Length: 378
View 1 (tube, one colour):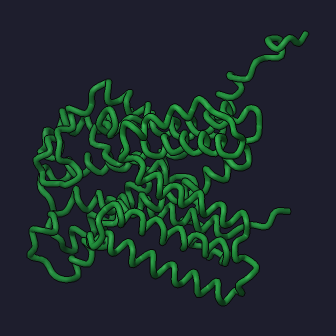
View 2 (tube, rainbow, N blue to C red):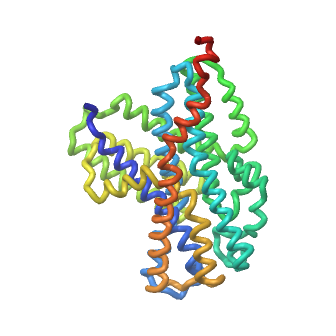
């Protein structure tokens, strides 16, 4: 029997927390007046600060993605059918969520842009996350460009759904990493090396790839049990506490723009990589409430990330009619309800999409596998 690794559940908890941080920042921007308006107390200044870690949360996603994809590639890259199997796994994993999210998000945006006619959808509400006319991004070429993961490269993100920017990064990292590893380990040139042309054309992807590769380094540290047997459990607890503090400090420094964005992303990625490594070393047990968060993180965080913005934008346009709330108890209550509703929406969406990924993969692979007759069988 393989021993359960509690650290993997902790990773899923962080996926939940990261996705929720993204939702919080976007919901606060859509529903509340910007912080520069002022006129509110110190408590709400703290709330503004604590609900602004969406970008740092994406760096956490990149590190965890690098860890899990590196594990998959390492286990399977010597198989003769690696590329067909790997590409089906990765593309189905993404598209089974992305395509329905684009369709439903486009419908919600159409209702808001053409039915409600509010300033939010024309980019005139003052929300930093919607500074453009949404209707101009509902064109077919933008839709298909997002399906092909060319958003922010050759096309804009579809409709109001700005968070889709990171999916283009993820997709191309999925292509680059195994192509480079097969070249380095197996000394074989893959056609997928041609995907590196994307990095030449759009070098802005490389910073995120550096953070993503920290997750790959994390996998190597864990695989080779670096320090695992050399330090005792008290020292592992101390390392975990230290890395948690450093991770929070780095995220705060990034949020306050103390460091340039490029340096901040690298520092945040490095600190969280250290935190995840310490969790792998320590492997602390997971309390019941955290397990529940981990289940959501494992099964629904991707869906939540991809679908929350058009949903929250339509709710904001319908309820506020172009206005935004001043911080207060009412605004806090509205923010909390909207975030909980987005979490519920993401979970329901995931049951019909993300949760069916294994079935769709099996279906696609069955259709791509040649029948015995086509292989010369009788």
